[in-house]
Structure formats: structure tokens, C-alpha cells
Length: 267
Image (cartoon, rainbow, N blue to C red; front, top):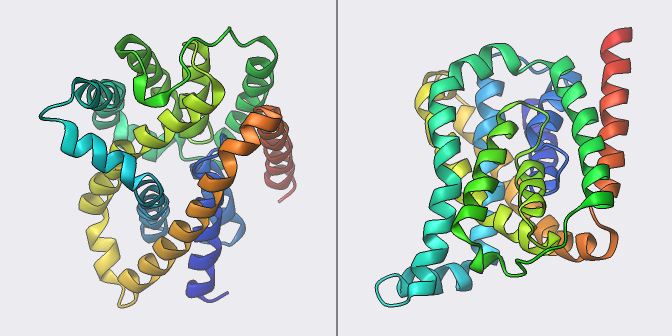
């Protein structure tokens, strides 16, 4: 399969899974393995195209984010929202910098991904059944202690297959946020989290990127596809969660994890 087609497939996988609680990284690793893509270039590619999906959040929520930005000097609510995102972001920064090399060397393993998908699926089923009564209905009014709790739980997503969006949505629901508000806060928190991951991997993987004559072009293609597909998913997801909850994603994770384990056991 030509690399440009692999880039399109992985871009689609990224955009379609980044904002739903099924683990985009887990699906990307499994897809790359099924496509026979290995090596440091593709490891870097998988992380870097995630920024394309994150920019879809910025584009769709640009008006609200811009109002926060221009309101920082004069509006207490804007400063409070920015502080809530910053507080939720800090735990991932600390642990990410400390454990980055260990995670990439040890945990980026298809079998770990499969088990993480399965266990995370059961967590989503349990959360839908036994979630606490929500008291926070607006993501932009998330209390600071709630934001800290979400940020701490987000750290679990450093294990491939856990899902960053899944961990933050579950964390928000456990901290008594409405599912829709938890999902929106997950979108906002994704911006600094994934920009940080992109920057770190670009610095560490720039030699692999520029070592290939088509490296930048391949990444740009995957980046563009992930942006477009991410845009579509964000517009669809909130309504889906309102109507159906998190259980469909839980069943999907369990099915994907079992299928992955069967594949890697038989091949």
C-alpha cells in the first residue's frame, strides 16, 4: 500500500476517534500494525496528526474561545475558565515529561492497547449505569477542584488504549458534571494537552521526519484528513451522547479489544 494512502487511513482513524471515548492512540496503533507500518517515522506520525483533530476544536469553538481570550483582562468568568483548563492540564504535563520515554518504550504495545480498550469499555458501561447526579451543567463554569480531578484522571490516558477523551469525560462525570458538559470540557482540555504532546514529539522526532524526502508531505496529508474528520465528529458527538450516553462506546471498545486480541493471538 502506498504511504499516501496509509496516511489518509490513519488520518481518518485519528479524526474519527480522537473525541469519542474509544482511544484514538489505541486505534491508531492497531491500524498501523494491521497496515504493516512500523519504525520511528510512523510512531511520530501517529502523534503529530493528532494536532489536526485538535485544530478542529479551535475552529468550531473559535467564537467562544476568542471571547475568553479577549475577556481575560476584564472578565472574572473568563479568567476562571482559563484557570480551570490550566489546572486540569498541569498533572498531564508533570507526569508526561517524567514518563514520556517509558510510555513510548514499554506501553506502546498492541496487547496492552487491547486490554486497555476492554477494561475501559467496562468502565464506560458502569459509568452510564451508576453515574452520580450532575451538578455542573456548563463546561465553561467548571469549578477548580472539579477541573483538578478531571486533570488527575486524564493522566490514566497516558496508557495507550485508555483514551484521553474517555478518561476526561469519565473524570468529569465522576466529579458530578453532566455528560455533555464533561465532553465539552474534554474538548477544551484537549487543546493544550495535544499541542504539548505534538511539540514534544516534533522535537524528538524531527530527524525521522526530515530524513524522508516525503516526510512532511505525508504528515501534512494525515494532518488535513484528521482535521476534516475531527470536525465532523465533534459536531455529531454531543447530540449522540445526549441521546445514547456512553454505553455504545463501551461496547465498541470491548468488541475492538477482543478482536485485536484474537488477531494478535492468531497471527
